[in-house]
Length: 330
Image (cartoon, rainbow, N blue to C red; front, side, top):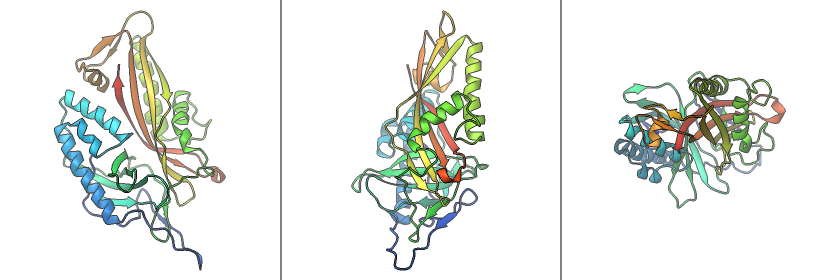
């Protein structure tokens, strides 16, 4: 759904200035050679090219079925919902061209293989400054590469440097014991932070992304709905998707994770609740002109790019970017 089209390939692990720099280590004398990246820069660029061409075709045709050949969850679920909304609301999706793509490619290991591409974008003829981080994942060497995350921090957000070894490979984090927060707890902890107003009381540092955008947005939505005679109750659901993390130069981790929340919208007293005409939720319900019912159940997908420092650093966890989109309405 979110197309990324490369203009040129960079190094396997490159400086992502101004958002992130490069880190590397020098092996000690007599040490074993560092493990190389799982794929070359050229191979990563080919994966990005194939995804972007197919993605623009899927978007132009508003063809949700075509997403199965280029994306996997969690990105695919959100893309399918967004394509349905765009089609029902008659909103064309502009072609997106990725500019100056660069790659963060881990060394080999057990399990599925994955890497991260970063790029700025030319969207409908408008160039953006923000770096988009797209994760590509491969179940095994005989399986296709599929996009699984796509997040874009604002240009005011500083993304920590990702570390690289002497072979220019990043490190995929699989042992989270040294981190200030287990990545598997991010969904529940982020939800608790903004729903219980825990700023300054938990592991997260105050940020525009988490507190001003996600937290305040949620709070305002509750207030607006209440003025309309409605109440919304949000509950997080368990996630099957495992977070993906890269080691940063300071020992922390850059983490991609997902969260599913279920919103139940009901009247404060007797009566019915409504979905606004032209909203994503109304379109997903199949009523673009708005809908009224005794209750609505809205499942939303929230994806996050988060920096988790080490326990020893005593630094706060920081949410760097997120996406939020309804994936079903009943």
